[in-house]
Image (tube, rainbow, N blue to C red):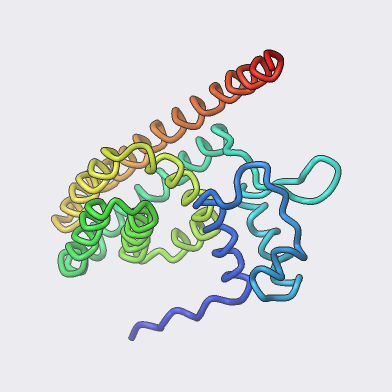
Length: 237
């Protein structure tokens, strides 16, 4: 008997709302986060907003502002590297255990996740591509039978969503490669090839990390150049 997941709490809903605004670019890096304004915008009291901001600070989406208060944190390549190194280990373990414990279920339910992913790629909608990607990886965590894997990943999904959104808006071909690799991982799980499933999963996460970190570093390099160009333009005026 499977237990239905609990409905998201008010704090969870506020976390999701703020995350969505950061991921979509409504709240950009450096944007100041004022609790009263957020509470009014979401129609809640300050308490769930305060708790949500604490959680988002813990996962790297929010940081202390100069002086006082909080702002949307800029993407830090070092933090993203650390996060993906941890994720590669967990995802590899999940795939290995899934192949050992749930190959039959993977064969029954897995193709629907793959089909949804390919449809999301065709749609071109970044939000849909991210949601189907996360759903697939959560499915593998569920197949593993190890609840600690999913629980460990929960606080990090907001930051991962932001990283994926930032890159997938510009790297359209990456989405197709991602789902080809997902198919290979699922095939290894279905066939009970646990060592291959772990290797493929870890390689998949590591390749994605390389693309994401390179993209973030390029963005950081371009910002000083843009500031110099703007300064020169103002002086010429």
